[in-house]
Length: 175
Image (spheres, one colour):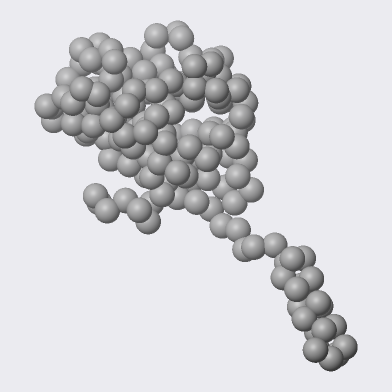
């Protein structure tokens, strides 16, 4: 290899390393149904969770809606677990029980839509699952890899009435 070609290859390689990958927002979504609860529920309640992880990977903005809930909505969260398994609460979306962190919004009556933003300050510890408080990196990693689910709880079904495994929007073939 000539010195000139060697210089070109080295220069091009350095350029590739120096130019960051083009980042963009990441869209996440799920449909919520009773059939996805563990164990499954046969009900007509439905919901949808849509979120956008910003390109800096520092904030998630979200919208959650639900309708036809059999009980009165008591709380909604994002949990850490794979499909078919119950997991701990990573983030509160709303609560009427007074058990959420300061600033947790109230869950409105059905049918409803809520929205908000999640940052590292909102991520809770899950000791039995090795999630440290404020660990936004692991939170967003769980969202992106399909190991998080949105869950709406009610007075009739305190363990959860609606559930949906969160996935990258382009992976969601159920819409």
